[in-house]
Image 1: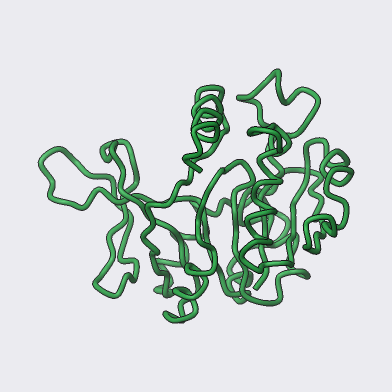
Image 2: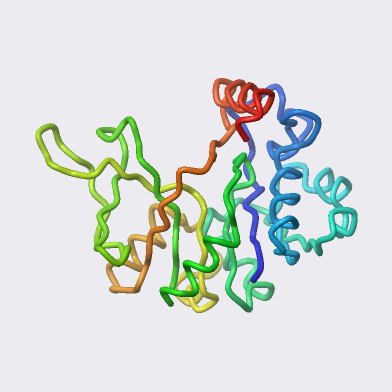
Length: 235
């Protein structure tokens, strides 16, 4: 199983930190956030990693090289223009010839990747993504799923509705045949276009419920919180 790490973002909300480096090289503790993810992949035995690049691409290449230092093999997929989460997968199609994770490069997580991979394989769906309980359901897109964890729909709740406050997170697993549902040479969102389209086509998507630590550091406030959590060993 391979791992695709989304790392092309401009990191505009973290300026001036990202004026000279990409967001994924911003440090949490003594390491860039992307290095924490590479180490996580290596620890769980996922050694084939694809990283997409756009903003300061050479700085990422120079830092990670071929990945040998971390016991992994890294290849890079460069985007002249940012293609969106799903569009990035299409650009890197030649590398994605087996089941693969999609991780957000700006997320600190303690997720047990092996458990999630086992769950995905057992269900045999086209894709699996993480869900977790949310404490702000009325401004979140919630997920409805059946007793077998198969996704039924996304919805935005209204006051007075009965619902489980469960929302989607940014970690996915897909089978390579998902790539045929992504158009070529256009920007295409994973969250807002690909997944809704797969549900319309009645493709089997499953949720994997996890309360493991997973937070993005894409704004100054979130970065501060993640750094504090890291110092307190919550991650």
